Length: 405
Image (cartoon, rainbow, N blue to C red; front, side, top):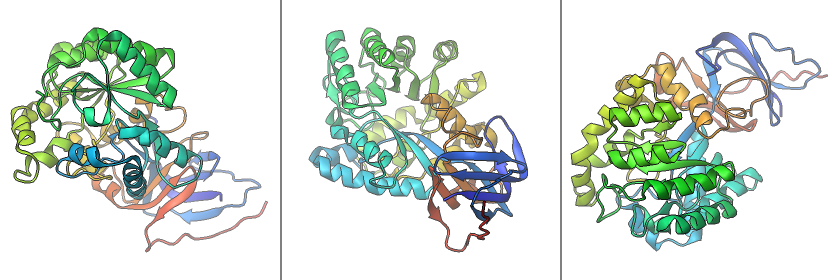
Protein backbone atom coordinates (compact mmCIF):
# COMPACT_ATOMS: atom_id res chain seq x y z
CA UNK A 1 0.00 0.00 0.00
CA UNK A 2 1.23 3.49 -0.89
CA UNK A 3 0.02 6.40 1.25
CA UNK A 4 0.00 10.13 0.62
CA UNK A 5 -0.31 12.47 3.59
CA UNK A 6 -1.59 15.87 2.45
CA UNK A 7 -2.06 19.28 4.06
CA UNK A 8 0.00 18.16 7.06
CA UNK A 9 2.64 19.79 9.23
CA UNK A 10 5.97 17.97 8.80
CA UNK A 11 8.61 17.97 11.53
CA UNK A 12 11.42 16.63 9.40
CA UNK A 13 13.84 16.42 12.37
CA UNK A 14 16.75 17.20 10.04
CA UNK A 15 17.50 20.48 11.74
CA UNK A 16 14.62 22.59 12.99
CA UNK A 17 12.85 22.48 9.64
CA UNK A 18 9.05 22.57 9.82
CA UNK A 19 6.96 22.35 6.65
CA UNK A 20 3.41 23.65 7.01
CA UNK A 21 0.71 22.14 4.79
CA UNK A 22 3.20 19.67 3.35
CA UNK A 23 2.91 16.25 1.75
CA UNK A 24 4.58 12.88 2.27
CA UNK A 25 4.39 9.93 -0.13
CA UNK A 26 5.54 6.57 1.18
CA UNK A 27 5.11 2.81 1.06
CA UNK A 28 6.81 -0.28 2.44
CA UNK A 29 9.99 0.45 0.48
CA UNK A 30 10.45 3.78 2.25
CA UNK A 31 9.66 7.48 1.97
CA UNK A 32 9.29 8.23 -1.76
CA UNK A 33 8.89 12.00 -1.50
CA UNK A 34 8.43 14.59 1.26
CA UNK A 35 8.07 18.34 1.02
CA UNK A 36 5.68 21.16 0.26
CA UNK A 37 4.30 19.20 -2.68
CA UNK A 38 4.97 15.71 -4.05
CA UNK A 39 4.39 14.64 -7.65
CA UNK A 40 3.17 11.06 -7.19
CA UNK A 41 3.18 10.63 -10.95
CA UNK A 42 1.94 7.24 -12.05
CA UNK A 43 1.40 6.07 -8.45
CA UNK A 44 -1.72 4.47 -7.00
CA UNK A 45 -2.10 5.64 -3.41
CA UNK A 46 -4.45 6.10 -0.48
CA UNK A 47 -4.67 9.72 0.59
CA UNK A 48 -4.92 10.82 4.22
CA UNK A 49 -6.01 14.40 4.84
CA UNK A 50 -3.63 15.74 7.47
CA UNK A 51 -5.48 18.95 8.33
CA UNK A 52 -4.66 19.83 11.94
CA UNK A 53 -2.15 16.97 12.18
CA UNK A 54 1.63 16.73 12.42
CA UNK A 55 3.86 13.98 11.05
CA UNK A 56 7.32 13.26 12.41
CA UNK A 57 9.68 10.29 12.42
CA UNK A 58 8.64 7.30 14.48
CA UNK A 59 10.10 7.68 17.95
CA UNK A 60 13.13 5.73 19.18
CA UNK A 61 13.45 4.56 22.78
CA UNK A 62 17.19 4.16 23.24
CA UNK A 63 17.11 2.13 26.45
CA UNK A 64 14.61 -0.68 27.01
CA UNK A 65 14.60 -4.21 28.40
CA UNK A 66 12.24 -6.40 26.40
CA UNK A 67 10.89 -9.25 28.49
CA UNK A 68 11.59 -7.54 31.81
CA UNK A 69 8.18 -7.34 33.48
CA UNK A 70 8.11 -3.85 35.17
CA UNK A 71 7.30 -5.52 38.50
CA UNK A 72 8.64 -4.10 41.80
CA UNK A 73 11.60 -6.50 41.57
CA UNK A 74 11.98 -7.49 37.90
CA UNK A 75 15.28 -9.34 38.38
CA UNK A 76 13.59 -11.64 40.90
CA UNK A 77 10.83 -12.33 38.37
CA UNK A 78 13.29 -12.85 35.52
CA UNK A 79 15.25 -15.35 37.56
CA UNK A 80 12.20 -17.63 37.53
CA UNK A 81 11.30 -17.13 33.85
CA UNK A 82 12.20 -19.48 31.04
CA UNK A 83 12.96 -18.28 27.50
CA UNK A 84 9.35 -18.75 26.40
CA UNK A 85 8.03 -16.64 29.32
CA UNK A 86 10.36 -13.79 28.43
CA UNK A 87 9.49 -14.11 24.74
CA UNK A 88 5.75 -13.81 25.43
CA UNK A 89 6.36 -10.66 27.46
CA UNK A 90 8.59 -9.19 24.73
CA UNK A 91 5.91 -9.71 22.07
CA UNK A 92 3.27 -7.99 24.20
CA UNK A 93 5.61 -5.12 24.98
CA UNK A 94 6.38 -4.71 21.28
CA UNK A 95 2.70 -4.10 20.57
CA UNK A 96 2.63 -1.51 23.34
CA UNK A 97 5.65 0.31 21.94
CA UNK A 98 4.09 0.51 18.47
CA UNK A 99 0.77 1.78 19.81
CA UNK A 100 2.70 4.56 21.56
CA UNK A 101 4.39 5.65 18.32
CA UNK A 102 7.74 4.10 19.24
CA UNK A 103 8.83 2.36 16.07
CA UNK A 104 12.41 1.55 17.13
CA UNK A 105 13.94 0.39 20.41
CA UNK A 106 17.48 -0.23 21.53
CA UNK A 107 17.34 -3.21 23.86
CA UNK A 108 20.08 -3.18 26.47
CA UNK A 109 19.79 -6.50 28.16
CA UNK A 110 17.52 -9.52 28.07
CA UNK A 111 18.07 -13.00 29.48
CA UNK A 112 18.71 -15.89 27.05
CA UNK A 113 19.25 -13.43 24.13
CA UNK A 114 15.48 -13.43 23.65
CA UNK A 115 15.65 -9.90 22.22
CA UNK A 116 17.80 -11.15 19.36
CA UNK A 117 15.25 -13.83 18.50
CA UNK A 118 12.45 -11.29 18.85
CA UNK A 119 14.28 -8.88 16.53
CA UNK A 120 14.60 -11.61 13.93
CA UNK A 121 10.90 -12.45 14.17
CA UNK A 122 9.94 -8.81 13.65
CA UNK A 123 12.33 -8.22 10.77
CA UNK A 124 11.15 -11.37 8.98
CA UNK A 125 7.50 -10.34 9.35
CA UNK A 126 6.50 -13.20 11.65
CA UNK A 127 5.10 -10.73 14.20
CA UNK A 128 4.45 -6.99 14.40
CA UNK A 129 6.83 -5.03 16.57
CA UNK A 130 9.25 -2.13 16.60
CA UNK A 131 12.60 -2.15 14.86
CA UNK A 132 14.99 -3.66 17.43
CA UNK A 133 18.67 -3.00 18.04
CA UNK A 134 19.47 -5.90 20.33
CA UNK A 135 22.31 -6.35 22.79
CA UNK A 136 21.16 -9.72 24.10
CA UNK A 137 22.83 -10.67 27.36
CA UNK A 138 24.84 -7.89 28.99
CA UNK A 139 28.47 -8.51 29.93
CA UNK A 140 29.13 -8.09 33.68
CA UNK A 141 31.79 -8.95 36.22
CA UNK A 142 31.12 -11.95 38.44
CA UNK A 143 28.25 -10.92 40.70
CA UNK A 144 27.94 -7.62 38.86
CA UNK A 145 24.84 -5.52 38.29
CA UNK A 146 22.19 -7.44 36.37
CA UNK A 147 24.04 -10.77 36.60
CA UNK A 148 20.69 -12.63 36.52
CA UNK A 149 20.39 -11.93 32.79
CA UNK A 150 24.05 -11.60 31.88
CA UNK A 151 27.32 -13.24 30.92
CA UNK A 152 29.68 -13.02 33.89
CA UNK A 153 33.32 -12.50 32.96
CA UNK A 154 36.52 -11.28 34.65
CA UNK A 155 39.76 -10.08 33.12
CA UNK A 156 40.52 -9.25 29.50
CA UNK A 157 40.58 -12.80 28.21
CA UNK A 158 37.16 -13.60 29.62
CA UNK A 159 35.50 -10.35 28.58
CA UNK A 160 36.86 -10.74 25.03
CA UNK A 161 35.37 -14.22 24.93
CA UNK A 162 32.05 -12.86 26.22
CA UNK A 163 32.04 -10.07 23.63
CA UNK A 164 32.78 -12.49 20.81
CA UNK A 165 30.08 -14.83 22.12
CA UNK A 166 27.48 -12.09 21.91
CA UNK A 167 28.62 -10.99 18.47
CA UNK A 168 28.39 -14.62 17.30
CA UNK A 169 24.85 -14.77 18.73
CA UNK A 170 23.86 -11.87 16.50
CA UNK A 171 23.94 -8.88 18.86
CA UNK A 172 23.71 -5.48 17.18
CA UNK A 173 25.66 -3.89 20.04
CA UNK A 174 27.30 -4.87 23.30
CA UNK A 175 26.00 -3.79 26.72
CA UNK A 176 28.39 -3.65 29.68
CA UNK A 177 27.95 -2.83 33.35
CA UNK A 178 30.68 -0.39 34.36
CA UNK A 179 29.31 0.26 37.86
CA UNK A 180 26.92 -1.20 40.36
CA UNK A 181 23.19 -0.58 40.04
CA UNK A 182 20.01 0.19 41.94
CA UNK A 183 18.07 -2.99 41.13
CA UNK A 184 20.78 -5.49 42.10
CA UNK A 185 20.83 -6.25 45.80
CA UNK A 186 24.18 -6.20 47.53
CA UNK A 187 26.18 -3.85 45.33
CA UNK A 188 26.87 -0.14 45.59
CA UNK A 189 25.52 1.73 42.54
CA UNK A 190 28.44 4.17 42.64
CA UNK A 191 31.16 1.52 42.81
CA UNK A 192 33.25 0.68 39.76
CA UNK A 193 32.89 -2.85 38.48
CA UNK A 194 34.77 -3.50 35.24
CA UNK A 195 38.16 -1.81 35.00
CA UNK A 196 39.02 0.56 32.18
CA UNK A 197 41.23 -2.15 30.68
CA UNK A 198 38.40 -4.71 30.68
CA UNK A 199 36.01 -2.18 29.13
CA UNK A 200 38.61 -1.34 26.47
CA UNK A 201 38.91 -5.00 25.54
CA UNK A 202 35.13 -5.22 25.02
CA UNK A 203 35.08 -2.02 22.96
CA UNK A 204 37.92 -3.31 20.80
CA UNK A 205 35.95 -6.44 19.96
CA UNK A 206 32.87 -4.36 19.17
CA UNK A 207 34.84 -2.03 16.93
CA UNK A 208 36.38 -4.91 15.01
CA UNK A 209 32.87 -6.18 14.26
CA UNK A 210 31.51 -2.66 13.50
CA UNK A 211 29.25 -2.82 16.55
CA UNK A 212 28.38 -0.07 19.01
CA UNK A 213 28.58 -0.30 22.80
CA UNK A 214 26.52 0.93 25.75
CA UNK A 215 27.68 1.18 29.36
CA UNK A 216 25.47 1.21 32.45
CA UNK A 217 27.08 3.82 34.71
CA UNK A 218 26.19 5.55 37.94
CA UNK A 219 29.41 6.42 39.80
CA UNK A 220 31.85 9.04 38.52
CA UNK A 221 34.95 6.84 38.16
CA UNK A 222 33.00 4.12 36.38
CA UNK A 223 31.62 6.73 33.97
CA UNK A 224 35.12 7.97 33.15
CA UNK A 225 36.46 4.42 32.75
CA UNK A 226 33.74 3.70 30.19
CA UNK A 227 34.25 6.93 28.26
CA UNK A 228 38.03 6.50 28.11
CA UNK A 229 37.54 2.88 27.02
CA UNK A 230 35.58 4.10 24.00
CA UNK A 231 31.94 3.18 24.63
CA UNK A 232 29.40 4.68 22.24
CA UNK A 233 26.81 5.63 24.86
CA UNK A 234 26.78 6.25 28.58
CA UNK A 235 23.55 5.15 30.27
CA UNK A 236 22.06 6.91 33.32
CA UNK A 237 25.19 8.79 34.47
CA UNK A 238 23.89 9.95 37.86
CA UNK A 239 27.26 11.31 38.99
CA UNK A 240 28.87 13.21 36.14
CA UNK A 241 31.53 15.82 36.80
CA UNK A 242 33.14 18.41 34.53
CA UNK A 243 36.03 16.11 33.62
CA UNK A 244 33.60 13.39 32.54
CA UNK A 245 31.63 15.86 30.45
CA UNK A 246 34.80 17.11 28.78
CA UNK A 247 35.77 13.51 28.00
CA UNK A 248 32.34 12.88 26.45
CA UNK A 249 32.64 15.96 24.25
CA UNK A 250 36.14 14.98 23.15
CA UNK A 251 35.14 11.39 22.36
CA UNK A 252 31.70 12.17 20.90
CA UNK A 253 30.10 9.93 23.52
CA UNK A 254 26.29 10.01 23.74
CA UNK A 255 24.36 10.27 26.99
CA UNK A 256 21.12 8.33 27.53
CA UNK A 257 19.92 9.78 30.86
CA UNK A 258 16.77 7.68 31.62
CA UNK A 259 15.52 10.40 33.98
CA UNK A 260 12.11 8.82 34.48
CA UNK A 261 13.34 5.43 35.74
CA UNK A 262 14.32 6.45 39.30
CA UNK A 263 11.25 8.67 39.67
CA UNK A 264 8.99 5.68 39.09
CA UNK A 265 10.72 3.85 41.96
CA UNK A 266 11.43 6.51 44.58
CA UNK A 267 7.75 7.21 45.29
CA UNK A 268 6.89 3.54 45.85
CA UNK A 269 8.16 2.72 49.37
CA UNK A 270 6.60 -0.49 50.56
CA UNK A 271 6.15 -1.71 46.99
CA UNK A 272 9.75 -2.03 45.83
CA UNK A 273 12.49 -3.55 48.02
CA UNK A 274 13.83 -1.14 50.65
CA UNK A 275 17.38 -1.40 49.30
CA UNK A 276 16.29 0.24 46.03
CA UNK A 277 14.76 3.22 47.85
CA UNK A 278 17.81 3.56 50.09
CA UNK A 279 20.17 3.63 47.14
CA UNK A 280 18.11 6.14 45.16
CA UNK A 281 17.73 8.59 48.04
CA UNK A 282 21.49 9.12 47.95
CA UNK A 283 21.79 9.86 44.22
CA UNK A 284 18.49 10.93 42.64
CA UNK A 285 19.10 14.68 43.07
CA UNK A 286 22.53 14.29 41.48
CA UNK A 287 20.89 12.70 38.44
CA UNK A 288 19.16 15.97 37.52
CA UNK A 289 22.30 18.02 38.16
CA UNK A 290 24.40 15.69 35.98
CA UNK A 291 21.90 15.88 33.11
CA UNK A 292 21.84 19.67 33.27
CA UNK A 293 25.64 19.77 33.31
CA UNK A 294 25.71 17.62 30.18
CA UNK A 295 23.13 19.56 28.16
CA UNK A 296 24.69 22.91 29.09
CA UNK A 297 28.02 21.66 27.73
CA UNK A 298 26.44 20.30 24.53
CA UNK A 299 26.88 16.55 25.12
CA UNK A 300 24.86 14.66 22.45
CA UNK A 301 21.72 13.14 23.95
CA UNK A 302 19.60 10.13 23.00
CA UNK A 303 16.33 9.61 24.87
CA UNK A 304 15.59 6.35 26.65
CA UNK A 305 13.30 5.21 29.46
CA UNK A 306 14.80 1.99 30.89
CA UNK A 307 11.43 0.35 30.14
CA UNK A 308 11.04 -2.96 31.96
CA UNK A 309 12.37 -1.66 35.29
CA UNK A 310 9.87 -1.19 38.17
CA UNK A 311 6.59 0.42 36.99
CA UNK A 312 8.37 1.49 33.78
CA UNK A 313 5.86 0.27 31.20
CA UNK A 314 6.46 0.51 27.44
CA UNK A 315 5.42 3.88 26.02
CA UNK A 316 6.61 6.34 28.68
CA UNK A 317 9.08 8.01 26.33
CA UNK A 318 7.01 11.22 26.15
CA UNK A 319 7.17 11.51 29.93
CA UNK A 320 10.95 11.22 29.61
CA UNK A 321 10.98 14.00 27.01
CA UNK A 322 8.83 16.18 29.27
CA UNK A 323 11.36 15.73 32.09
CA UNK A 324 14.20 16.63 29.74
CA UNK A 325 12.35 19.82 28.88
CA UNK A 326 11.63 20.57 32.55
CA UNK A 327 15.36 20.29 33.20
CA UNK A 328 16.37 22.67 30.41
CA UNK A 329 15.90 21.25 26.90
CA UNK A 330 13.74 22.90 24.27
CA UNK A 331 10.88 20.92 22.75
CA UNK A 332 12.82 20.55 19.50
CA UNK A 333 15.93 19.30 21.33
CA UNK A 334 13.87 16.75 23.26
CA UNK A 335 12.11 15.48 20.12
CA UNK A 336 15.45 15.29 18.33
CA UNK A 337 16.82 13.15 21.17
CA UNK A 338 14.06 10.63 20.40
CA UNK A 339 14.47 10.79 16.62
CA UNK A 340 17.61 11.80 14.72
CA UNK A 341 19.80 12.00 17.83
CA UNK A 342 18.81 8.48 18.85
CA UNK A 343 19.34 7.25 15.29
CA UNK A 344 22.87 8.67 15.31
CA UNK A 345 23.61 6.91 18.60
CA UNK A 346 23.00 3.54 16.92
CA UNK A 347 24.68 4.74 13.71
CA UNK A 348 21.46 4.22 11.72
CA UNK A 349 20.71 7.86 10.87
CA UNK A 350 20.97 6.93 7.20
CA UNK A 351 17.87 4.76 7.65
CA UNK A 352 15.70 6.25 10.42
CA UNK A 353 15.31 9.41 12.49
CA UNK A 354 14.06 11.99 9.98
CA UNK A 355 11.33 12.50 7.41
CA UNK A 356 13.09 12.61 4.06
CA UNK A 357 13.23 10.76 0.79
CA UNK A 358 15.00 7.42 1.01
CA UNK A 359 14.51 6.90 4.75
CA UNK A 360 12.45 4.02 6.13
CA UNK A 361 8.78 4.91 6.39
CA UNK A 362 8.58 4.78 10.19
CA UNK A 363 6.19 7.67 10.85
CA UNK A 364 4.13 9.05 13.71
CA UNK A 365 1.09 11.28 13.10
CA UNK A 366 -0.45 13.27 15.96
CA UNK A 367 -3.10 15.96 16.38
CA UNK A 368 -1.75 19.44 17.07
CA UNK A 369 1.84 20.62 17.25
CA UNK A 370 4.25 18.76 19.56
CA UNK A 371 6.67 21.68 19.45
CA UNK A 372 4.04 23.64 21.35
CA UNK A 373 2.73 20.78 23.49
CA UNK A 374 4.96 17.72 23.87
CA UNK A 375 2.06 15.72 25.29
CA UNK A 376 0.33 15.62 21.90
CA UNK A 377 2.79 12.79 21.24
CA UNK A 378 0.99 10.72 23.90
CA UNK A 379 -2.01 10.14 21.62
CA UNK A 380 -0.91 8.95 18.17
CA UNK A 381 -3.50 9.28 15.43
CA UNK A 382 -1.61 7.02 13.04
CA UNK A 383 1.57 4.98 13.43
CA UNK A 384 3.37 3.52 10.42
CA UNK A 385 6.21 1.01 10.72
CA UNK A 386 8.06 0.27 7.50
CA UNK A 387 5.16 1.79 5.59
CA UNK A 388 2.49 -0.38 7.21
CA UNK A 389 -0.24 1.22 9.31
CA UNK A 390 0.11 -0.47 12.70
CA UNK A 391 -2.10 1.86 14.73
CA UNK A 392 -5.03 4.17 13.99
CA UNK A 393 -7.28 6.11 16.34
CA UNK A 394 -10.82 4.92 15.72
CA UNK A 395 -12.25 8.42 15.31
CA UNK A 396 -9.94 9.15 12.39
CA UNK A 397 -10.87 7.66 9.04
CA UNK A 398 -8.63 7.84 6.02
CA UNK A 399 -10.02 9.74 3.07
CA UNK A 400 -9.46 7.43 0.16
CA UNK A 401 -8.69 8.99 -3.21
CA UNK A 402 -7.27 6.25 -5.32
CA UNK A 403 -5.42 7.58 -8.32
CA UNK A 404 -4.46 5.34 -11.20
CA UNK A 405 -1.24 5.41 -13.11
